[in-house]
Length: 348
Image (tube, rainbow, N blue to C red; front, side):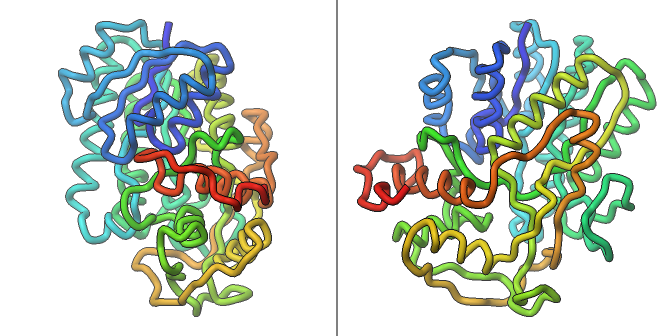
């Protein structure tokens, strides 16, 4: 009996696959490599010493999804697959609504057809939008401020309706904050296409020399230094949260939302300084205009996940930075081509 991981070749998906395999689960991975690289699947096997089945499938292809269920004894799904860039979603909203929502509808239709009712959904803290209070708790009113966040919110509402129609469903909505870091082996990490949309790979690519400088989007927020404040969580802590949620949904029915974060907010400049400490040199940056749809402060109240899932974020900022940097030093151009380790690796 297998766990289906959609988007399993991606950043969070690949780290979750490692944790699943290490915990003794059989997995089936589905991905179309739109936001990922095939090399990550090879690394998962190398790190864990285990093999698994993979399907090159797009969730917009209903019949292809059905073939995966026909050929495997799927008992639960962890659903990562989807487009994920806030800025791009503002300029390409129809693409995001079509890909993320229709893909999830197809997945759920196939799951229901084959009697697979256990689902862990990769949601996002973007569903909270602009809030007057922090930390953010799961019972706050939801009000996404950009198309990416609205796709996550719409899918959460669809899943709520799905459970209301059929109480066999057991669903965890994981609203996680800002994943950073990489596997401690330095063999797998975040490998974005083009200029990164997320802060940490942007910082590390500037530090390693792939990009000339970091653009800091907004220096006039109502924060301690004018830059946006976020809750950064190590990707391995996040992956372990998915395992805890999987155990929970396999033993219960219902639908619940959980924040996965550290409960600590760091500004963009805080993160730059933390990386400078790890790397040992300044990181060039320039403050530019805010990005549309960004909020000023966001960090989690993760007490519900602590209490109900027995999950805690254990890795601190220094480990987040060191693991991110180790991955970037080992592979300055990501998975595309392996390079000799540069001298900075000795600083780890």
